[in-house]
Length: 312
Image 1 (spheres, helix red, strand yellow):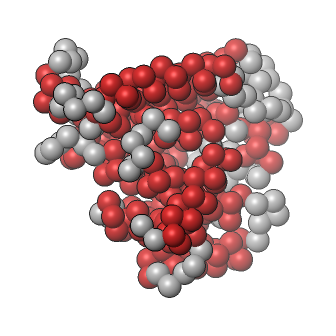
Image 2: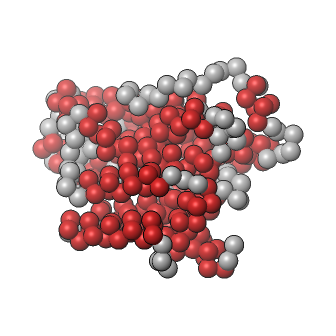
């Protein structure tokens, strides 16, 4: 790796560490050969997010900037370290370009779509903004030989579960951007209005709504976790720890009495550290030479369910 490419990856690592603490902590459990690629994909998504999420965003200007970022990613010729690292990751790990096409299409939706009528409508957006992130990462996590297609639905659910968890944690921040990511049909079913959300009113109706959405997120997390055994042993503790950390965010929302309209809950530093230490021990064991793919699969009594819970 050239010095310039190493510097580009280092910048992606800094972006991940600064903006995605839970996710970054989990990536540290990956082998050093895989870690930079995951950081590069995170940084690319973060740069695109920042374009559409900046205060007072001009949709026309942001759309132009997204188009330019997408073009540079596709065609090259850029010296932007995030693009340089992402292009190298895509080539090195043979990640399909169509996944990035879908991602940028979803980012453009944020410039003109502020709410979603149904869960199915929201899933259409989340396919490009979240599910494809799981699929982009899947080659780096290395499914066991011949199981890439079987692992794909779990990778999709992993991305969906992480994003739905973020939506629930960040309701207040998204309201400030003029967006509501909870399906309107769910608000209607539980008697919650968008005016109530904007007024930051937490009542029994809102708590019931959030309990329902947390249950949906946990279902996605649980199904994604079933696919961990389909991955190379050296990747499993990264994903296992990430699932626990995101589940911890859901726990914190409940502990806060569902008061997420005027604050941002997070998993405490102590719990994050404990999960990281536990995962590091398992990750070290997984890298020992006698741990093989076959032994890891055959030693589990619970069989993965190849059906995705995407419609949960």
